[in-house]
Image 1 (spheres, rainbow, N blue to C red):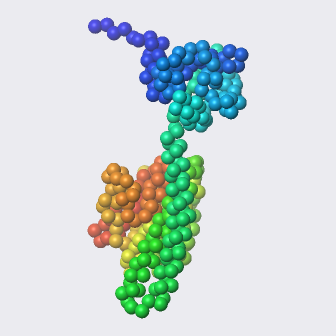
Image 2 (cartoon, rainbow, N blue to C red):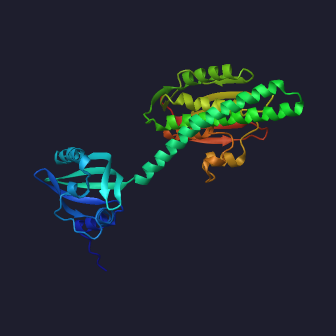
Image 3 (tube, rainbow, N blue to C red):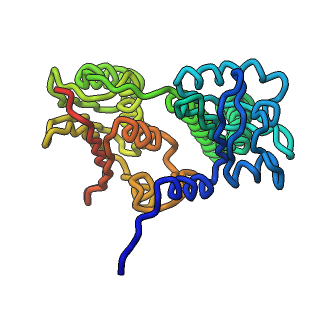
Length: 339
């Protein structure tokens, strides 16, 4: 049986029409983009049932107050430059938000691709409002609860009342810490990642000293060679601080102990934090290491380890969690060696 290859043009047209994002091909006439053809998705989103060939693209979908911006994009395309921006365009359902990509095709032609991100942007706004409520209202209210409960604890007349108030204070402090961690995660993960050689020893030394001052009852030791560098950025300090904080803050031992060690293994640097706490439950270990597909909301020890996981992934590394038979936890972070 002889198989005849499909022409490049036919393949392109097939791909063009099967794309889920609206795509339009245009040609410039007197500096204006005139539509040559549009795929099915473009018709469905912008002009169902209408022919668009030979129409002026900007007049069809660009809001009047965005025409100047569109002309700037057009000039860049005409000059052979690509465009990428978040824009607003008109549809039969009203204005929608799109990720726009303009691609020059030579000879006064170009393509425009529109990915509808309206719902995603709205979700981001909703989450931003929720974050603000958590960060401000909830945290302020928890501080008030903690302050009143502490004052009541000082004047409590029975042991039973003191135990109840102590539980209220611990719970309020835990929720306040959770708000702080959520705020830190938002700030940290919003920043772009630009990897460069980073002195791991200096970071570990600074963080361990700070943690020892905050948790005076803890025994924190360090075994990290001088001059050891990894590919990371200035957020490496937050990663190490989250590991040590988690090892000590949730440690129920009468004498909390934490050890930070680092070594080079097969071209990677392995950062190991060991503690003598109660250990991380199996379900939580599996959630963090992606062995169990479960929402982060089921993680009961706060958000610190999630921050460690997400930063480690930003650095191209990996995380492993172990709970030895004699209790405690061992968290291993593998990062690219910069030396």
